[in-house]
Image 1 (spheres, rainbow, N blue to C red):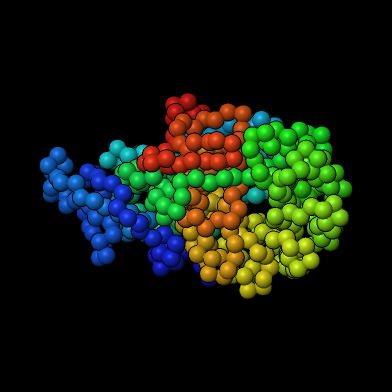
Image 2: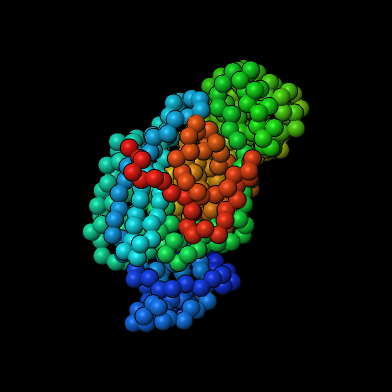
Length: 432
């Protein structure tokens, strides 16, 4: 099974919805109309100032098939942002964000923004590699003829294939889709289905000592967070001590445990046993074992599900459609964690369809990202409305917010307005 995008699979989850607004023609828009009449535009020969606005309805599949993208400018720059504190997980430590920002401008003047998140030992790319590959993609976009959005994204997929360049591919896809959505004056959450315009996220406590973890838990309790995601997996006994401290500071919170591959199967089961003795039942146990330990993942999932009523999520173990099929066929996990930086935007949409068809629950997450990438993922999650677990908190861990406008934050809740695209942008001249 391949990761290539298919209109058939996308159409399952990305349906059109009732007419929203009217629009004027733009030079780079397609002049065709879909057979079903779901996405309508004006004919090119009609002068813009004298055209009569026609109600339109939008869906992502329609946009892929009928909107023509004509790129005038495409550029990438480093996106470096300090963290409030080091972000430590079982597999790595991050002291600052070193991502890549991507800006695409169409000949109709619409601009789209994307971000390629970099997390050492999780994403395949480091920042220098991501910068080089993003520059290659941007060079192609500047020279490419006008193509439908679907055709252009297919070309980008060929330039940036597989997991090796998934984060950069995601960033370029974000920018192109955002530019197209800006052109037709539709917010992404509506484009992706319009199920909702809000999401409520958990918030992450990285690997720290018990006192600091308790302080963070108390802080997040006051800010209205009901679900805490605790990074574990480096030391089992220390993890239990931290859990006990958090439980005292925020006794009514729900827990997600994320081991980031840090435990072996026996250690993962032992954590669940000790939590059971404490009267604590996590709502989710994320990636308890190494990503290639399929037998161990299935074993932990079986014990967690049948003995403790805990769902297990596959994160690092899920990087392709083939991985989802293996997980579903072997009943190896209950939840698939969707991250755009792992599989790209189009790859994520295909995985969502396959996971839903297999009866698996869905989680949406991210790397350590600014509100550019996190905003795109949030729009997608709100629009589709099919995610049981929302983990889109990492912009809250940054000491600066370089993104202007975008979604509104109120504690754990993100609200997406009717601003076109994802609504966020950077002061490009201020980026290194």
